[in-house]
Length: 117
Image 1 (spheres, rainbow, N blue to C red):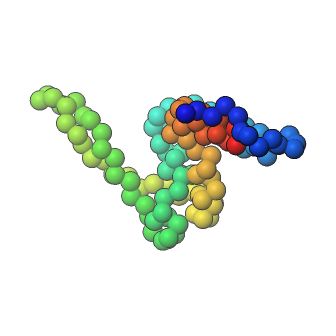
Image 2: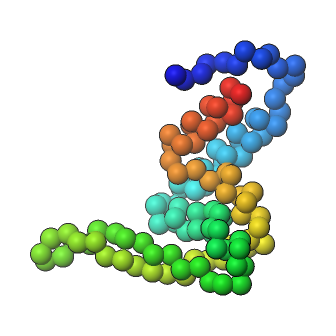
C-alpha cells in the first residue's frame, strides 16, 4: 500500500526535508545527464565501495559483464578497470552515497517516503 500522508501532524515547515529532496533531485539529474557510461563512473567515484573505506590505500578493480555481439551470436564478456578515486577522503562516501539513485523509480520512491514521513 502506498502511503498518502502520516497520522502525526507536523508543527512546522519541513525545511530540512525539502533541502534533502532538492539535493537528491539535483544530483540525480547530474547523474543521468551524461549517459549510462558516465553514470556508472559517477557511482564508482561517489558511491560507497566497502573495500575503499576499509582499505583506503588499495586500488579498487571493477569487473563488468556485458553482452558482446560476435559472428556466432551474442556472448558475455568481462572487462576490468581500476575505479577512479573519490576527490576526498573515502569515509565521506558514507555521506555522498545517500544522494545517488539507480533510476527514476528509486528516486521517486525514496523522495515520496521522505516527503510523507
